[in-house]
Length: 263
Image 1 (cartoon, rainbow, N blue to C red):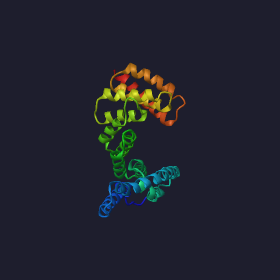
Image 2 (cartoon, rainbow, N blue to C red; image 1 turned 180 degrees about the vertical axis):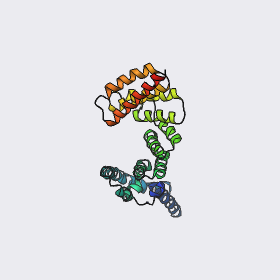
Image 3 (cartoon, rainbow, N blue to C red; image 1 turned 60 degrees about the horizontal axis):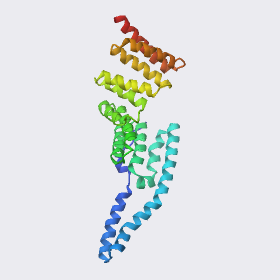
Image 4 (tube, rainbow, N blue to C red; image 1 turned 120 degrees about the vertical axis):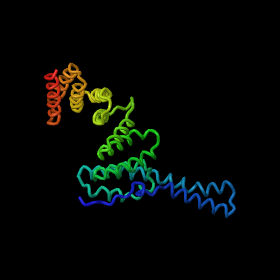
């Protein structure tokens, strides 16, 4: 793929609040020059932005849903060359859509194009603007971008920020566990994260794969009886698994077998 021009994420937006701020300043100055009293001045300054916002809101919501469908269709079809032009064509959204709704989509596009640093910038900008309640998902997306860029220290920090006691994502917990070990962190803490991943994904094929990874962590922590028990559960969970699951089982069996031979 030929190199693409990657503008800074914020520079792709024409935020309406900037236009509103310019209008308010101009309207206020003109109102003062015309000698308007308080109420007429307030109507002149605040009225048009409020009315425009009421008109734009349903249009933006509808256009955002359409853009979502178009973006997903292009991703599923593997049409990577269409992704950035599709985003650039969203003039209404780039003017009026909140950055925390639009920039994550740009981050996804950059990630698919292999522009990891631009993706990180997009997710960071979105996270800075996001209201309370939106931070967990954006932290997760930013962590994925950092992980793809091999910034494992920052990725681990944002993965942790994306999780709490009431929101357990099995895949994220498993990735935190692996990152903790890869970075020489606390093996017991990594084990606990993997146990949470296994419990959260119980009954799913991914749960069996996570259990195989837990087996290897238990072997490393010299908990062979616990490892044997979890290996038996993993074999049951992955009895009809695909090649990926079989490979995980093979590694777990080998790790436990080697540990028993050495003990």
